[in-house]
Amino acid sequence: MTTLAITVAVVSYLLGSIPFGYLLVRMFRGVDVRQTGSGNIGATNVARTGSKGLAIVTLVLDALKGYVAVLFALGLAQSPRFSPEILRPETSYSFAALAALCAILGHMFTPWLLFRGGKGVATAVGAFTAIAPRAVLISLALFLLIVAVTRYISLGSMVGAAVFPFAAWWLNPFTRTATVLVLMSAPSLLIILRHKDNIRRLMAGNENRFGAERKPA
Image 1 (cartoon, helix red, strand yellow):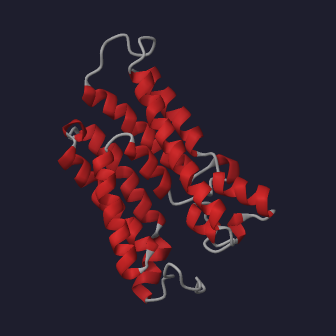
Image 2 (tube, rainbow, N blue to C red):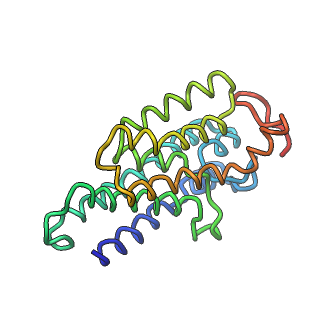
Image 3 (cartoon, one colour):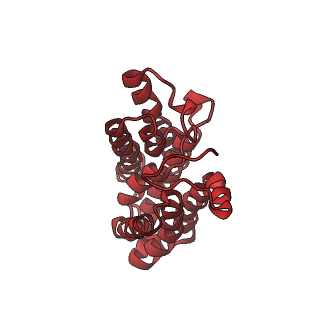
């Protein structure tokens, strides 16, 4: 079990650490996305380079790396080589949640860019879609509602992240163990903490609205 946990953690972190936003902008626009806007490598900041197409591709790829990490973990958990005994569903979900957390950490703190990455929202959506898709839908619905009403992507992201663990616990009985809840709540907390600058701007009333011209940080 220890070998399985270490393998899942390392592979998921490395998958999550692939800086798609940075690579795409560097390849197709010849610039460093970290020198634009917030300095993050996620889709929102990629869009600030002037390429919505690259932003969409970044969003999809960042989500996919989280999704693939969880599928990898579930595959290993069901492999006789790593798990000679049949694992209970709750145990398999623990490895899946570990993969999600490590993939998100890889995106936030990628070693290829001196541990400077993104905020982890898209990677979290992809990873948790493979674990608790209905809970993700609830979080996405709240995200879209808040963005539609306020035009604050940051606020929608934080509310969606905060609600997700509760929605998962409510909708999926296999997520109601202490281990799974902790592993799924940790990314939500990390995502909110990564929005600390946005929180300060929201409180000051000068946060950037979706579709509006960016204000100085």
